[in-house]
View (tube, rainbow, N blue to C red):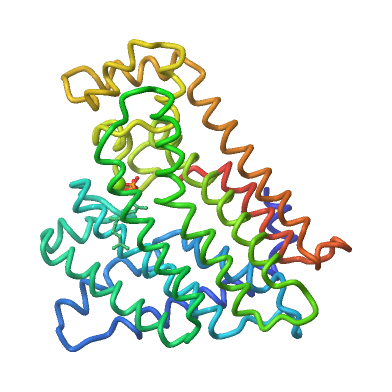
Length: 338
Ligand code: FPP
Ligand code: MG
Ligand code: MG
């Protein structure tokens, strides 16, 4: 792994500079005179997040920009900035919805300030993100990012109920996963293509490929998240583990396990609400191939994401270091521990 890292060091350094500017921009945008709102809004932008969204967005943008050293346009950087803002706003709201008290290794904003102020801070961040979006001045891009917000809310809403039949449950899970996670990757990757001032190539086709890459990457990323929920510890994650089962949510590991152990259906339908349900579910997940199948499905999405990158015109001679880095990031997602 270290060796691979070395190969990518110059690329990583360049992307790190982007991330540094993005963080600076976010803090600047969020500044306001209401001191408490100021502090609360900036609280989770302390670089403890993985910044995987801006990393993917900047790398995608640089991979096809034809100017010297794969220049990143300011408007493309804005997409990464507001993508991270929308994501973080949704997490602050999510911790209220989930009554979760830890986030990114520290007390959640909702615990520190109470749910009412935390919800307002999320709204505030979303408002600022909308200003940044409007300033880009591209109505197609405004539609894409508005769709992301719509999808985030739909995904979060879908999680509040459970479908009756197991076939519906899995489809519902995949739809929800797209809405909650993959939509942001898909639509922001597409947006940076539209903002790329590209000539001599079919922009709409490239935008579709970028969307498909983001979608498949996002699905893989969330499947691993759902796997880690049943395999990792609180400290690994910087937030509570087995949170999904505790919230009554059925994700891939338990849905796959229920195909082998139908008795899980009763627990899934009552959303693990009776005492001993969570322990029993974990036991059956362990005895089943639910974890392996979840990993395998993540791998399939990751492979598809990498395959799509072959369609990028600049990949023809195989020398585009940003496309290679996207492949590396996709493969790393499968190996992540938090
Ligand atoms: C984290 O899921 C939650 C999301 C990715 C989406 C949350 C969306 C909303 C609260 C809707 C409001 C949206 C906006 C833009 C303000 P999780 O609970 O599975 O992950 P976790 O383990 O990190 O908490
Ligand atoms: Mg949550
Ligand atoms: Mg949630």
